[in-house]
Image (cartoon, rainbow, N blue to C red; front, side, top):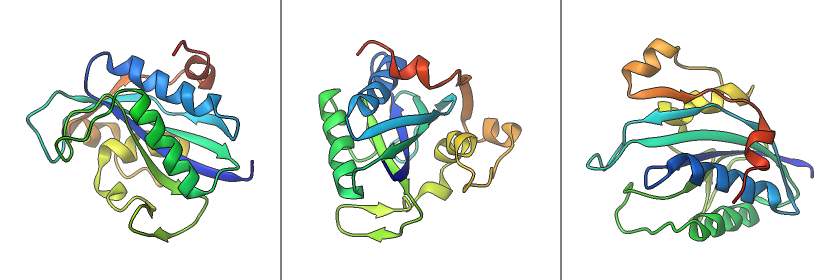
Length: 167
């Protein structure tokens, strides 16, 4: 497994934490993926379509032998398995998995753009990512994050807590 990728995860329907845990476990259970780092979980205000519940967001680092497009397919399979529907852009969802970084590659196709095009505009992505990724400078202090509707909801406690959870 020679590729390193960073994935943002979010949920704002139902048992949000359970959906995040299941998504991390499903990533880790794939034969070509190992989850190596997990961030804290943040509770965040919705962005874009604001008439919906607050999100829980986090990020993970993985090592994988998948190429970026195979990883995209896997993340979409996990979203579907967890009941994701796409009815409203930026709307409510059980699970949302976005590839933020893949090695140090720049990819721009109709299906996939890496680095994620709005990553640096979104504190709900940057705050958890900065915890686990040395490539990303922490662009906000905790106080600034709280002011932007992004709050630590649950401190990270390690990969094992997620990859060994029941799905």
